[in-house]
Length: 108
Image 1 (cartoon, one colour):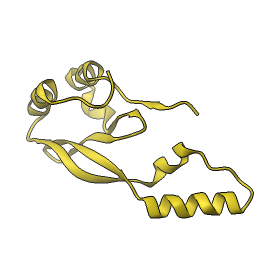
Image 2 (cartoon, rainbow, N blue to C red):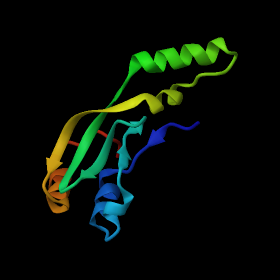
Image 3 (tube, helix red, strand yellow):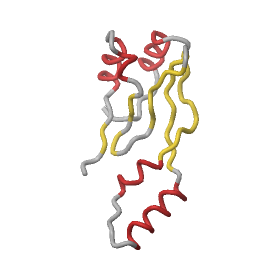
Image 4 (cartoon, rainbow, N blue to C red):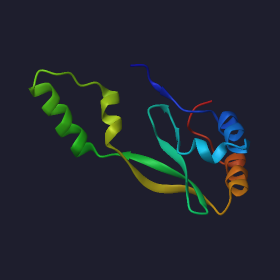
């Protein structure tokens, strides 16, 4: 499986500015692996970091290998959980403004 590549800042802004932006949510961000998600909870628009539940991932990997199966790094992605909120905004426009000025670490 190829490494993960989420949308660039420019692509994300284009999606969010479109009339269908809310329908595309959640949007997963990251370079090489999923690292955060853009989502909407009620009126709150936010970007939330993802964290790997290493214990569950390790147990699943061990079980897969013990049963003669295989285990690849991207198989851990199903054990990603939401962690801290990176950006929280009261509207889509506020989120767009925050994305335009924030440090971007999820690809080009």
